[in-house]
Image (cartoon, rainbow, N blue to C red):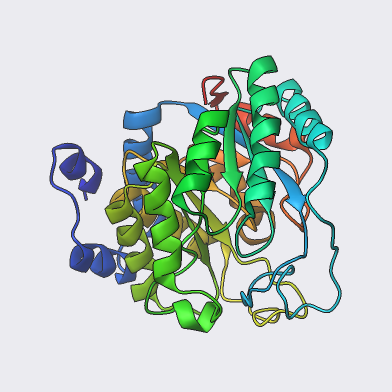
Length: 321
């Protein structure tokens, strides 16, 4: 097939070609994985980046995202306001002790208040003073330019704001903000020289065309890091009974994101344990980054299992992540 070599030679897939390749049942998924691996190897060798999440504010949200157990429509959920600064700082110590490269501070809600941004910024300044090598990613929702400036000055390296789905399917997922709102936040962070992290959630009823569109949207946004979440259905949410994924479909999706965004950090994120199942280690042939530990409100596998998986595959932790 030699798709990887073509891409490395400077001839990328266009959207029509990518969709045709994704849909072509005569193209074995493992063949796509092989092509994606050639790109992963060319850009990242055997390195795997590790990321850890702190759920710094939970369940307080006016948004109606259909996948989220913290949305306004969920009756039973864990709720707490922004945790104290010392708790954020302690989380960074834990991340550092577990060889994590990127520490992700995540808040529920539409977007942060200026007071909350100040709170996060003070915490990040303290973290950077004691753990200068630790990359800090903030995921605080829709933000404005002045907030982005404060975060940058404090030492925030990266800002995560996922597009989640395609522009065409967006209104099926959430109605309380627009697709443009999400894209604008990513662009604000880029303008303020904060590394943009933006990804997707697959398995929410989107079409194949939507999956390819997501990958090309992120290419156009020039997102440095692309977390790929696979829906982990939560009872009580709009998509709580949905089951559209299996391990090989997840591998096909991951491979297409690598082929479309060959040089970017592709991260296996939420839902990997329940959707990839025994193929989690194979997914590292495509992705070069994973979350370690628990997610926002769903559990992950024990850290040591991830470390063992990386070692068993012949990969190594990227300590410069």
